[in-house]
Structures are given as structure tokens and as C-alpha cells.
Image (cartoon, rainbow, N blue to C red; front, top):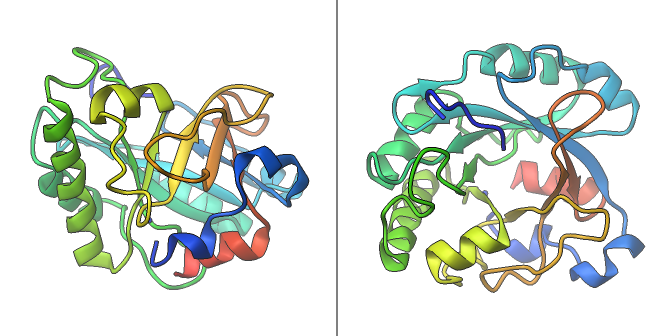
Length: 236
């Protein structure tokens, strides 16, 4: 995800996860993308016409930052017919997981069973302005994530998606397997050769962020399954 230097989800995993990544090219996939305020001219209609069916939109960061483009991006995605949802850029050193989950929920990160809203996504990755793991031990980081996940689940009835990389997850959580049966994985790996090693006991990724550019704005994402699976992820 792109971040600002200034401010620099699943009832059943089996229901939305697809086959292992070594069969990814043989499966149906659905294109999508993710965006933040860095993308000022997103062509939602063009993305939909090209085959994209979902977009994940930055809503919040920490407990002090609300993305100023979230509302306009969300409305644009809705008007274009895209399945859409919000994401929160975690700042584990600044406050508890519960506090940040509540901030996210208060500013666009909620979920509704309208069939068009993805569960919120926790973007947990490299610290853009300090220690890679935010000064937390692996066990403390897992506890922080669990605090966020539990709070989000208690308020929405859905588990949030978790966005990360194999390297960060292995380094900063000790490759924890605490979330692989509850939270859909959004795995970042910029490559044309597939999503690579899947961390944390997840058997496969639900969404692969495969490139940091996308023709119609933002980063490129690929849902690991067909449209019916994407719709199931949205509807719960």
C-alpha cells in the first residue's frame, strides 16, 4: 500500500479461499485494485469496463489520520458498480489494536450485508518511519493484531482481511498461524510469477496484490477465484 510520511474479513475461510497458488493460473480470477488519496484521478468506470469488479480504499491510519479522498473514492466505486471496502493502515506503536479498529469503524471501515461491501482490511506491514516491527516483539505483535481482529469482529460480525507480505509477517509475527482460519489473506508480492510463499499457515491467498501500478489508478489486485466467490466474500 502507499502510505503518507506525514500520517505515513470471513465467516468461513473455506467459503472464499480458492485452490492452492500452484493452480492459480488454471482458475477463474477477478481483477481489482486498491487506492488512497495518492490517486487523485481514478477511472472507476474504465476499470469496471476492463473487467475489474472490486476496489479496496484507504480509510484511516493509526488514530489520527482519515484519508481525505475516502468518501469521493467510495462514492465513485459505488456509482461504477464495483464491490468496495475500506482499509486501515496499522500503527501498532501508537495505540492498541482495539482503539485503531474502533477508529477505522468510525470513519468508513464498517461492513454491511448488502452484497457490495467487503469486510474491512487491516494493512499491517513495514513501518514507514521507524523500526520495521514498530518496536514490538513477535508475541506482542500477534496480540495487537488479535485485539484489532476481535474488536472488528465483535462490532461487525465479520473477520477483517489481513494485508501483509511474507517477509514482514515472518519477521514481525514469527510467522504466526493465529489467523489463517478466520481472516482472509491479502498478500503483496509484485511479480508476474505468482504470489510466492504464503505465510502464517494460510493455504492460499484470497487476494494477491501483484503490482504497484494499475492502468485505472492505484495498485493491481487479483481475487483468487471467480465472481461468485468474490460476491460471497462481500455478502458473508
